[in-house]
Image (cartoon, rainbow over all chains, first blue to last red; front, side, top):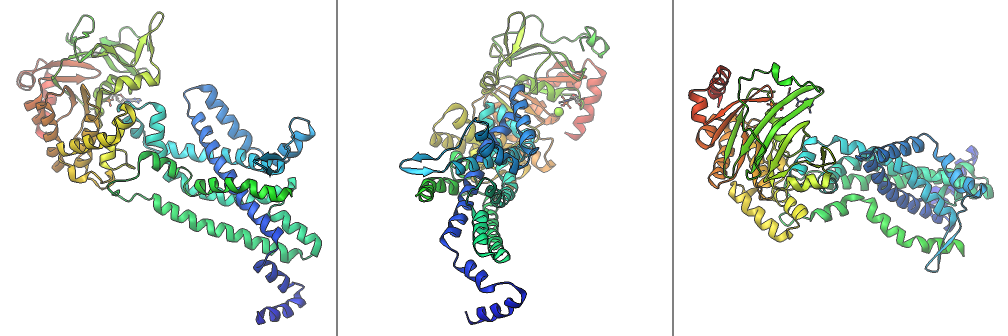
Length: 288
Length: 279
Ligand SMILES: Nc1ncnc2c1ncn2[C@@H]1O[C@H](COP(=O)(O)OP(=O)(O)O)[C@@H](O)[C@H]1O
Ligand SMILES: [Mg+2]
């Protein structure tokens, strides 16, 4: 820590408070950590829901019913054609102002889930679904037509063909862009500050207004975003490695169902599930 | 598209195939199959009966409609006119108010269960082991218990000489091995009729033999098959009937012996002479 003070001395000249920076970087306050945690769990839950909803939209777009195809296309057009920031304000503030729907805190087994968190997760998931739908659709389109025909020739129904033949193969194509989406998602959560959700960015902002250490505190926030995306990139790489075709499977092999369910979310889904369980705990702390 | 004179510009010279209504006692009975792509008639009135344990080999120039014919038989393609019965039941269509209407996907899927199809390009499922490629349909489509299906799949792989490759993914198998797995996969559904679309034409020459050997064994086991192939060795030894396709119609048919030595049509003679050199 001796060199910290040395740095601090030279920093005084530049107007950069190094000791403040290091202090917040190394031992961030409880509120800052809570903001960080909120950033993480909202990203994970919204991404997981976005993948599931995106799958539904992608399937609708490939349906044999024109109405469903049209609906899926309209959804993607609408969501991708408007900024996330506007969507957030519309859903949280706009609906309430128009008297259509007001997100209120709900009790889940004695714990409180904040209205603003519900609005945030919902909007992010709905937004993400449009992008995931396009990714999933492109992945399904990339699979050789002969695969569908082979499945059909074996008497598989369209839904069975999808579950047993197409989705498992699409998964491998989906994972790399899904990783990018999750990276974007973590950074997009900073937009939630606009509806007053105390995630990492808004936390940094409140520390800023109390201390006026603008550069320092937002640099700390940047470092934490960078840490999140870096950790994720390692996770993503290991998932991709595990999905790579090994040529030979070990004799007992995971069942088709295990492969599909275990693989569906790649890494994020199981983590998402774990976080959903903890979510009310955190919301409860927020409320108290 | 609704040109009623379609057949007239074809080089037909009287062969019509089986006539009268479709025969519900045959394994396959097709009448007047017509299929057009974008107004071009690729099948122009094809009729055929195949009885139990019969082996029919279909030959004909590239583009004459052989693949389309097979694909229509299990409704991978719809037909524009005509009728297809497999074991007396329509494939792909049911009676509507005043005409036939296409069945729902679920009903079509059910009809395909006992029609095996072997593709030119194998189309194995790359994410599954050879064993799972064979076991997946019995488990998922027929609801066979997993252990039992795997046991049967292992036996089928042994039957095509690939017991030792059960855990291999298709990507590490040779073309000949892949096609044998594909045959085992089709057999796993215990089909009453097997359709082969040029099963050896995507293979390196040295792998053709292993696949033909497996197919000959199926013939000996009494499987009913329609085989599109230019392997004249197989046709000569295994086919009950040789069918010559030309421009969307059956130009002529008969025993392999008859077509190879004394065909009614010059085109048949010329064609068979040409492919036999390669086969
Ligand atoms: N899906 C399709 N769309 C348009 N034309 C097709 C399609 N499938 C086949 N054809 C055409 O139909 C004709 C017959 O094709 P095919 O049945 O594959 O013949 P073969 O198997 O005897 O070589 C060819 O001219 C081919 O180009
Ligand atoms: Mg062909």
